[in-house]
Image (cartoon, rainbow, N blue to C red):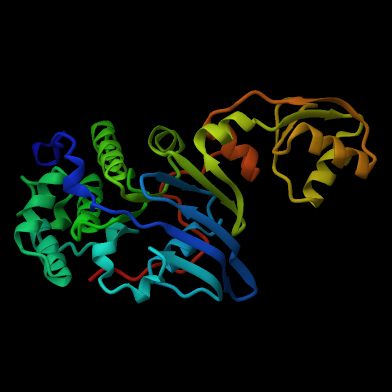
Length: 332
């Protein structure tokens, strides 16, 4: 690893989080692009002291939700609140919420230190804050280098640094682990854990399911703009769904499709469904489907949970283009 990107030890919690904490709340959020609903009556909460993973397949509505939450887009219906108020109503938004949605949009012609100092002046913070944050994100030796010469991982670190400049109570990060090597990912995990343990609120969107599993306390899973499941990692892991076979497998799959229920093939005849066994039994009775086996599936890891809840055959590739919103404007 290049010496300019070597991480420092995990920072003290007080250096990266505010004393208090503010919740993130989404209530009945709806956003349409033409006839298609990118976000459809979505509701969830992220509480102080927690790291929440925000998951869903490409086009699920994650980016649109984050843009509304951070004041970059306007909802057609519902509310997105930061500390009880919309982003655009915050008196000093950078002091309340730190945001990184696309580190690649950072201006390449400026140095890392210049970008952080400009951010500091916008927030009313002293220039010295830039050097504090450069050390926090492990870029103290690269502060005088133009960002255009940074690796993707260094840009990610700088983007996180911009989010931290106001010493906020909330962090909203989209794909922060992209481009980071294993040492950098471990650094980021420690940083976010310290922030949450000091009372901060973290909302983390990512396709890197194993990293999410190692980092978050809670999960919000969406698909087609709607909430699929919300809860702690332990709660969702324990649920496991139901494994079922039927006399007429095609009729079973058609019934699940009609009701919009996610399922995954476990063998040529067995399906795992995101329903409790008793609910699967009731559905089969109502649809007049003869089941040949029915039983609770064992608790699963995050990849299995994601596939079962969203009906995805494979995990989305990191960095795959999002389909739920227009491309964001560059940060200037």
